[in-house]
Image (tube, each protein chain N blue to C red):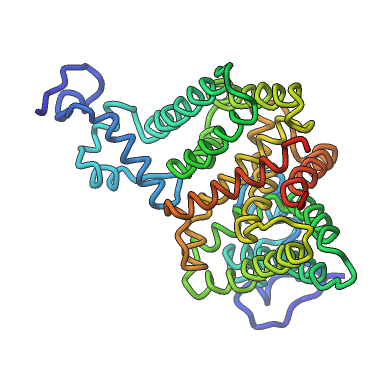
Length: 218
Length: 218
């Protein structure tokens, strides 16, 4: 099922077989490498080895490794922003139910892409002002706005205490991110792998329990 | 007040002036560089420039940059472990008062050394098994044990709900670490500097409020 690309898009395109789905497979493999290795970098040779795809395809699709990392950042964040937007828009759901559901999803998300926060910090740090602003506008600000809406609705309805949505955002994402991003350290120091489904479920229950108790009006 | 060292400790020692307090000043300066730059690395030339000390003193005191980073890790963690041990040992304090005081200190600590968690991860990652084990045994395990004791006492006394101390540790340190370690990103994206005393105090109040509400028995 291989096909030759006819796109005049750099030296790789004419010479390299471009299997269908190769772009998505490169992103999936890059994500798996960072997740498994608890790192926010990849080597193109490992990417080629694990995906079975010629590393010239990185140049073809993404220009270079930085372009690949940017595409992965976009892929992961777009899924999150869509999901949060859809949740906030559910007019028939109560604020408490929305927040519980959101916390559930945050734990699941960091379990799937534990590198995402660190990758975002890295990309912002290494980007020029325009790209850093794009990342902020497209991914960080929408999440902040969703928190403002979600927490604000709950406070107005009297079910949440007065909590600063921005500080609350750091409390939630910090608590969850920290757990899954310290994985190799946990493994190394305590013979414990935090990236098991069992531990994910325990941490999810713990997080929902303590955060909801922390925010619900008594 | 300069003195010539007579220690036969590598090429630097015989040739370089060793001002009193130079070792502590190198550590202070390295800490300030990482805090100001929101990074977990230093360049020896910047260290020399900002401290006014010859960078050969790094070799003299610490062997190399890795030795300097290890000494900084030790300095910062020893202060934390002593402080937590002293708090847990205060028999006349109630568990709730201890935990409030501890949360206050955690926010202060990450405000002072916002790089510490990332530096610890880096050192564990780059160390051999023996050194990684030493870091775990000397710094991470004592904090876990203190949480077990502190939370366990509160649960026994009926003032805390049943909370897993290990998961609680990640909730607290993650929430606080995330806030101060995302500083340059906040600044870059939102024109906001999270390392002001005003924001530290707001985040401290928020953290104590939501965590205590999350753990206290109703």
